[in-house]
Image: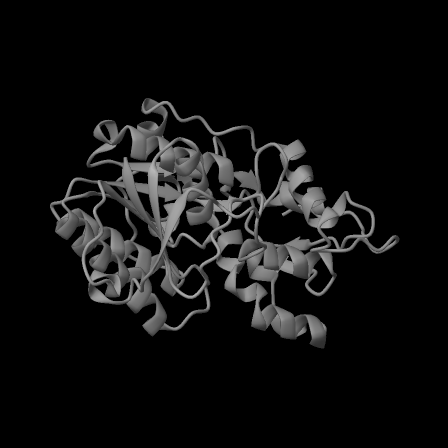
Length: 339
C-alpha cells in the first residue's frame, strides 16, 4: 500500500512511519522544517520517501498530488498555548488541505484527532460524541477538523488517541512534551499544589497502542471506514494514583492535590505562582474531570490496550529519570495527599 503520512517528524507520525515501513508499505513522509523522521526509539526511519511540504497550504504546497492509496493526517499543533492563528492554519485549514490532497489522489483518509474533542463534557463519551464547549484552542480546533472530515464525503476513518505517553513495556517516549512538562515541574518541586476534583482521572495511553492502532486501521481500512475509534486506555488513571507514583520515588517533588474550591493560586509562594501561571494552569482543567471514553468500535476491531497500571506508571517515571529529563534529589520527596 502507498501511504502519505503528514506530521511525519512528530511523535505519532514518526512511529507510524516506522511501523508501516517495517511492514513493507511504500511510505511517503511529509515533513515541514524538520526532515529527520525518527521512531519512538529515536532511531532514524529508513526505507521511506521524505517529502517537504506545508499542510497550511492548499495541496500541501506540492506541485502535484502524490500517487498514494491512503493519506494518514497526523500533522497538528498540540501545544495548549498556541495562537488562534496557529490552530486555524494547521489543525483546521491543514485538515481541509489533507482532504483536498486525498481527493486529488483518489485516496482514502485516516484522520488522527484526539479523544478530548469531548471538550468540557464529563461522564461516558461515545466514539461519535463531540463537545460544544472546549477548555482550550487545541480541543476546539481538532473538533473543527473532524467536522470537515465528516462533511468531506471521502472514504475516511478517524483515530482519537487520548493523552499519549510512553511505551507500554519500556516507558520510552521519543520526546518529552505536553503532559511531561507538568510532571517535570512537579518532580523538580517548582509546582507543588494543584487543584484536583475527587475522582478525577487522566486517560494516559501508551504510544505503542496508538501507533499500532493507526497502522491496523490503515491496513484493514474497509472494516473501519466511516467510523471513529477511541485509541485510549482500558481505564483512565486516577489523578491520585499519578501523585502517589511520583511521591513514591525518593528525591522527587510530591504533588499536593486540593479540592478545586479550596485552591487559590494567589496564595502560592511567588516562584510557584509564577510557574503555575506560566505552565501548570494550562493543564489544571484536566485535573477537574474524569471522562470515560467508550471504545466499542475499537474493541470490535480487535484492539485492546495493554495494562496502564501502577507498574506502568513506575516505568514511565523511571524512563524520565534514566534519560535525565528529571533528577531525583534525596530527601526532597514526600508522600502526596490524595485528591
